[in-house]
Image 1: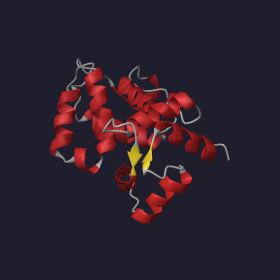
Image 2: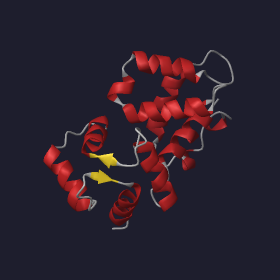
Image 3: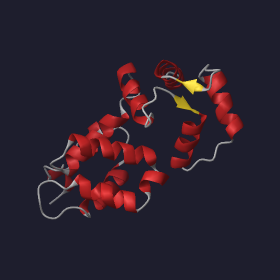
Image 4: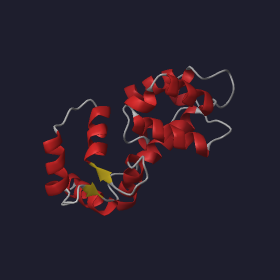
Length: 164
C-alpha cells in the first residue's frame, strides 16, 4: 500500500519542518517500536533513546519526545507522533508559533536561552560556533547585554531575520 494511502501517514503539508526523506527516516526508526499494535509505546522509545545517549547528544530532540510521551501515556501512532513533533517546533511565521519554538528550545524552562544553550543547539545541528560569535550574537543580534535571550528578544530577532 502506498504511503499516502495509509491512515497512519502524516499529511506532508502539515509538516513544514520536515522533508519527505526525513519523514521516511523517522518512520524507519518509529517502526522499531511497532509490535503490531495501533500505537507504539513511547516509554519503550524513551528507554532506548536514553540508553543510546540521545539525551546527551540531542537534548532538544529528547526533550520534545519526552513531552510527547507525557502527553500520550497510552502510546501514539506515527501520524500523531510526527504532527506532535511539528507542533513542538511551532510556526516560524507567527509570534505564537515562535513562542512555541522558544519554549521547545528552552529545555531547562528557565525563560531564557544563554550562550551555553546556543552552543548546545549549534552542536545538535552539527555546527561548531566559537563562544565569541555566540556572545556577539546574543549581545548585538538579540540586543541582550545580560547574556540571556528571553522569548520577546528571540521572537523579535527571528521575525526580523525571516522577514528579509
